[in-house]
Length: 578
Image (cartoon, rainbow, N blue to C red):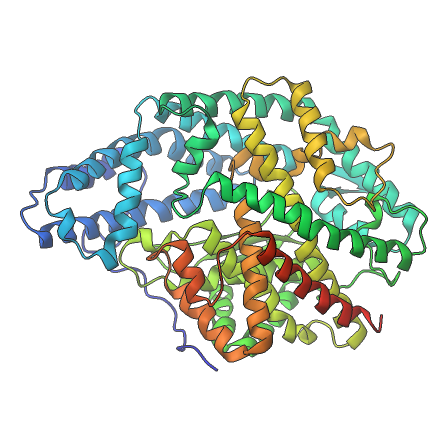
């Protein structure tokens, strides 16, 4: 089956701003806001034209800010890029936020807004109404401080290295060495990584305290009892509640964690260990050397294009266009910020993928994941409203995590050896299950942190260890490693930079399993449903988008149990001959 052939996206047609407009200073941008603020709106058509011009302005600003962020992540030492990003956050964003609120009020007060087509404007309007309700002028400087300060986390981690065999290595690259067969070597690497992180523990604790105080202030200014409740509204969580998150925590603890215990028990037995330690969790249970699915990043890209093209030619074409445009920055290097992302570019249309490849199985999975995001971006490019392209994370991550699982049938492109292919699939499915308790741990911890903002560091540490224990496999022996465990949360970027944005990965992971289960039964229908859901962008509520994919948005123990059992059954089949 083939989706509509993909041609290189045309940049969005600009009617309101000149095609060559380059955002540099506020004085060049302000006239367009003044135009929108002063324009008479005397009919529904006037209002629609006004909304579309405003959306064009938003796309121009969004793309300018996106490139500034890309440039500070590809090279954290680029002073000019850092200055431009800081200018965007400190000088441009506060003014834009203030003007955006004025525009929101014009829309909310317009007598014509109720005559807009609900099918096209429902999601957009509820978002605008939410923004007006939340806006407080006093929060603009606080939000600016938080945005700048939170980026300090990425800078700290990007500069962390350890010495391995006489050379310095980023922590991200060093992490791949935990897959090596030599147990003593893995143990040494594990200690080096965690000792290095501990060196900055006090710095990171102080950074977090500062962010916590400012975030609590933002919530208080907005009339909320705590930052959690504020953030749920700010994230536009219209389609689920705090109670749904608590259901997720419980379902993962009682339905998925026991399966993870079984997997770790199998791991301990396969490795012939009397005690399974944290440095034993990433090595292949066969005892073989780690899988190397590619040699150089060019090789990774070529293989990914072939793999995705087999699944659906449209998918491979998307990555080809990005490669040809130079919108792939994949290799790991010193000074490059950690992590990976897909940056949608709402104006030009061709997204940008950033990651830190170190020739590991995880790199291949990461590119499959980010490719899902990129394909999602391309499928929504033609929407005139930028809001339709800004999909909520519960949907964005569904696109990405599903791509990881759907692509597995074509991983023989990376692994010609049948045994290696099975090992790769086992690693993927183990990761799918094992990440869920960690996601629940981080999310539950955030609920406590932000509903108890006056806690001490000692209380925070005690609560963290208690929650970590609830979601940690009983098969893993962490004796003597308490000095690492107490600060293990420091590794999670989301806690510092994007609070409460993490459980979406778990929700989407469950959705991805459900689509993959459907794919096992009816592959062509599953791909059609997947594409149908992605093409909706954010034009419908989350539950309706999941329904378009042929799945449920459900965190009940019964539903989660069924999905967990399905993955376990697939693992049993793969492990049978191992």
